[in-house]
Length: 160
Image 1 (cartoon, rainbow, N blue to C red):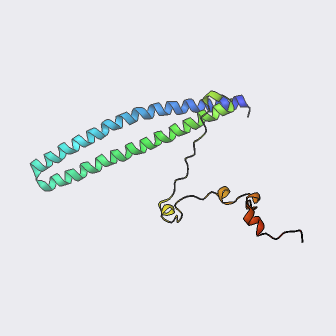
Image 2: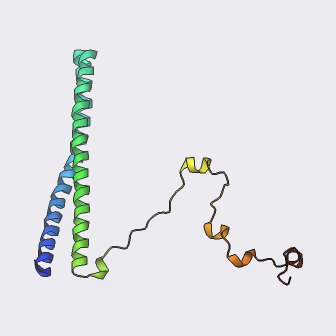
Image 3: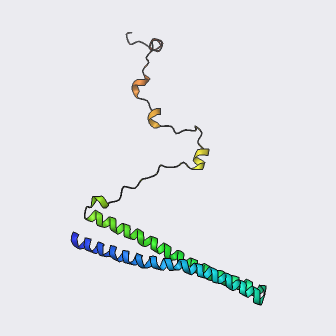
C-alpha cells in the first residue's frame, strides 16, 4: 500500500468518524430531553397514582418511573462513552495522518509525564525525612586525602 493510498484511506475514515459523531451528538441532545420527560412524567404519574389510588399505588408508580428514568440515564451514559471513544479514535486517526504526511504543525506535543508522587506509606516509613542523593554520598577519591598537617604527621613516612 503506498503512502498516498494509505493517506486517502485514513482521511476517508476521519470523514466517516466526523459524520458518525455529528449523528451521535444529535441523538445525545435528544437524550437530554428524554431524561427530562422521563423525570417529569414519572413525578406526575406518581402524584396522580398516590392521589387517586392510594399510597401503595403511588409507591408502585414511583418505583416504575424511577426504573424508566434510570434506564434512560444508563442509555445516555452509554451513548456518552461511545462518543468519547469515537472522539479518541478520531484524534488518533488525525495524528496518524499527520505523521504519515509529515505535517509537523498538526502533530501533537509530546506527552508530559508527571513527577512521581510519594505514596503515603513511603512518607511514613521515611526515617531520614529526605531523599538521599547518591552523588552527594559518594565522594571522589581525592577528598579522602588528608589536607592538614596533623593528619599527615599521623601517617607513617616512607623515608625509612
